Length: 322
Ligand code: AMP
Ligand code: MG
Image (cartoon, rainbow, N blue to C red):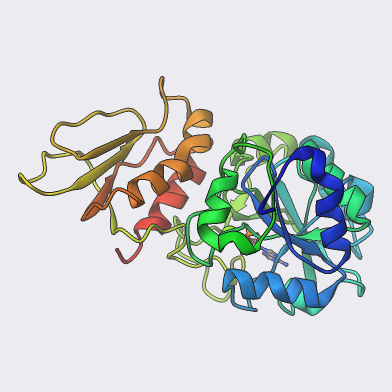
């Protein structure tokens, strides 16, 4: 049972309706989904992931209309962003309606909303009969799953996984807060680039993503944005360049396109420097390195532009404190 074929979608929906959790594919990463209005089911999500209750969940809807029913106020800029990027890897943080419980939002007055660009996710939300709260389907702090097998490795056979194959985008959604008259703020870098957002808004955006910027004193960033996250168990260190490791050392190399000599495992994220391809490969490559019994992983950041900013954010967090 752990892997459910797309033809078994109705079975997955039935489990959700019965208060169970199901891992679902999205275009970003696999999510661990529960009906957002079923609080015992949402509590199971936190427990299975080992996720602290202060880290709020993203609520997934099948349409813009269904998503915005959960917002107390939808500023015009939120509409503009949703019209441009939904369905897709953009999460909007808006003032919530009372029907969304504090458990889902970690006590905040705002809720994070997204319409995923994945047919199976949309069909599952429709068949389950309600919006789904779904964080990434990994143990807290670990590497996000981009393949159904990753979910089984993370959470064991107890959680049914709706098999949608590999995730197309491979990094999480970009989280943007749009509150009242204030200009939108990026709280987490992700699959929609800052350039794409500012093109639509017609002006630059503030990025308050904690790994690449010091936090503005007194201004909280996104809750749950911990410095160490997306981390393999093997120590991962960022290097400027690869230098042949001492003989006998088992070291891994992770970069956009380099093949250095003397490394035990080499992961190149893309064939021709393509950052879209690199993002889609990132977490699977980190997992393969983590499974190769290495003493350390050395990684070189990718160009800090477009999707590269989100990739580098994940690499910095994976390296933090290693
Ligand atoms: P995940 O579902 O694991 O990709 O993580 C969801 C992330 O979205 C959280 O860790 C927060 O950083 C962010 N988030 C969710 N809800 C809110 C909210 N109400 N306000 C700000 N950020 C949020
Ligand atoms: Mg996560």
